[in-house]
Amino acid sequence: MLSTARRRLRIRRIGLVTGAALLALCVLAAALWWFFPIRRANTRVQALREATLPDYVTADLIPTVGTARSGRTLSDFSGIVIHYVGNPGSSAAGNRNYFATPGTQVVSHFVVGLEGEVIQCLPLWEQSVASNHRNKDTISIEVCHPDETGQFNPATYAAVVRLTAWLCEVGDLSTERVIRHYDVSGKECPRYYVRNEAAWEQFLSDVQQARND
Image 1 (tube, rainbow, N blue to C red):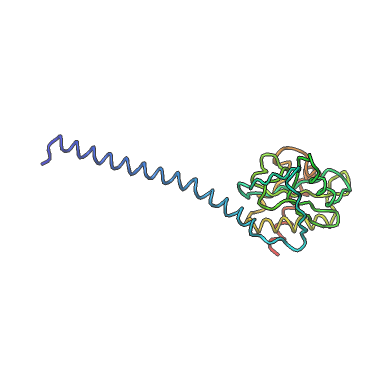
Image 2: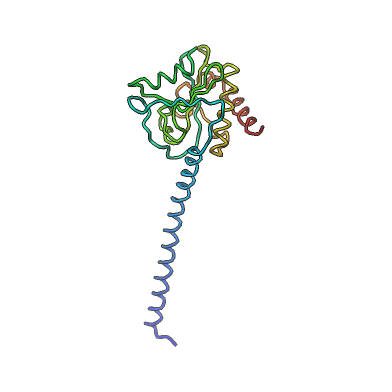
């Protein structure tokens, strides 16, 4: 039979081994918790880098010098933010050119115009300056509108739905990840779709339908 001292030593060793094993498991769990979200984020950003723009999008990237374009890479792609330009009757090209003006401190990834034209202003994987603290992980879409109500006309609406559905496909995002600037900052943007919740819900439904088609 083991002596009392030897039993105590054996128990102590078992305790040390068990403690070391538990510590190792905790370290592994923490590493996995950090690693996999980062890996998923990197995968989504990489999907943006590899995406081929639809033929209805015109790339007209603003230069980096003297503009709001910073060149910083997105930390993740986990949402799409819809805006309105707030300048009734203005064109997609006009808003793109405003973004490129030296000293301007705002820029989105896309501008959708009154005839349904879509202009890309930034590479998909770069951060915009449009959505406050969500610039780091979202794609921003600025939308032109004909009047003060902020309602998108039919051609513009159809183009925004199609573009948003495509971005959802690229990032494997549900429509729950499509939000308004209002949902980020409380700003009344896009105005019509803040004041008319049913219209916003219909927009999300139309995006989902476009994904299904």
